[in-house]
Amino acid sequence: MSKLFVSEHPMIQSKMAMLRDKDTGAKEFREIIHEVAMLLSYEATRELPLTDVKVETPITTADCKVIDTKLAIVPILRAGIGMTDGLLNLMPTAKIGHIGLYRDPETLNPVEYYCKLPSDIEERTVFLTDPMLATGGTAEAAIGFLKEKGATKIIFLCILAAPDGVKKVQDAHPDVDIYAAAYDPQLNDHGYIVPGLGDAGDRIFGTK
Ligand code: URA
Image (cartoon, rainbow, N blue to C red):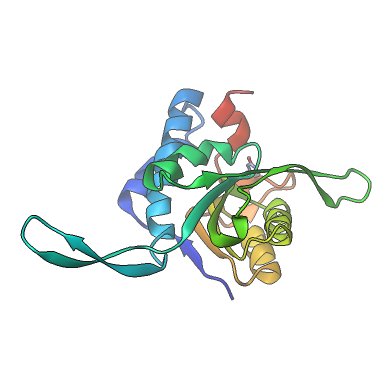
């Protein structure tokens, strides 16, 4: 079973209060998503593999460690894009892919409408981002598409997670750890997280 990490960090909790506030405008909302994503990526990179290196200091030789994997950030369109720069602050050499999905109105199956990934995706630890893990349908499908394209090590980052979404991802992809800034107890009849923060994409991009 994959791990669900929910942050208890005071900085993240305070920022979550601002994100949840319906009176927080798009500019501030975007900036805070960026900050929370950066703080969360600090936690999500905690178990990256390291390799030993020797570094010449001005005094002598030091035994050091450096990260031993290439990195990729893959936002799920469109709201996942709001988290990209926060992750990039921490891992500036990461390559960035994009994946877009819609649900076929007849079959209800997720269909990939856009996918552009680094060509060596199979060699990279992939940080897949989407602010809201609600029903989990999109995340489950996006992880499946990434695996079909060769990704083997995937970590999912969201701002808010709900039980249905966590279960769906964990059942389908027990190898994918989930990092969330907060965990809410339920969804409403429209699939929105409750108490939640509303429509993350609309609030990031100011489209409502
Ligand atoms: N997507 C959102 O943007 N908000 C929710 O609450 C659920 C899904």
